[in-house]
Length: 248
Image (cartoon, rainbow, N blue to C red):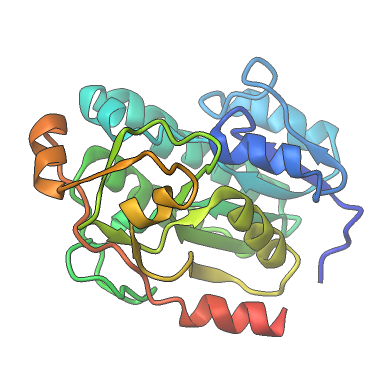
């Protein structure tokens, strides 16, 4: 069990998940430097923080997560999502102090067509974003004390869509629930990959609970508009996650 007084380094604090972690205030001694202080594309800035501070845990939320942006600029996606993770892993390995590494990945590493994917299911990425996140997972597994969280989430206060598909199914969870789940996993003894989410529902059903005027649409219409692959059924098997929650 981790000592709750240990320093926690949060990367990606300006993003949706990172800002929710900060806002929650459930992690004590949390340090969330901005990109000017620590840029994961710069190994020296990572080393400087790790050498200067008593960091015992890293929560890595830093990534280019917008599929459209990754499709338009794959080299940038690789530079941040893959090279940035490589830099982090390299500097953590140099410390040789069994630092705990919580890495946020995605359910998009699965085929996302039939649902009920377990942690042992075949990986089948479709888009540039998916490929970069799958590659970053392989890098994180060079560490000894890591948790890779495969997940999909939304912020109930930032639903900007006017329409949402009622035939796209996921295990998507509200971001504040994900924050609580990260805390549980951080202070557990679990090491490895875990699917983290809620029960299988359509995107429309999830959003409708918080945005009453949202309208239903179909997946095929969204694909024609966005011009990249979208999940049909990315729902995950949550047996391991539920077991960890029960034991936590």
